Length: 61
View 1: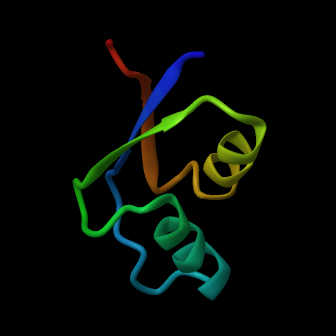
View 2 (view 1 turned 45 degrees about the vertical axis):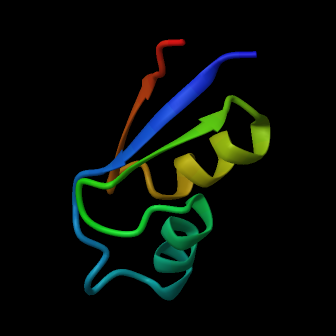
């Protein structure tokens, strides 16, 4: 299964509480922080809710 590298590129300050919680649920700790997740529908759904705050790319390896 493919992996996704998710990087926060915009701040969550001033955003909706649900968007802040989604960033936390993805495991992103700080701005420009990255996490790697399996490419699952659940993860894609979370990314879809905060697409304006994150950058997604396919992870190598």
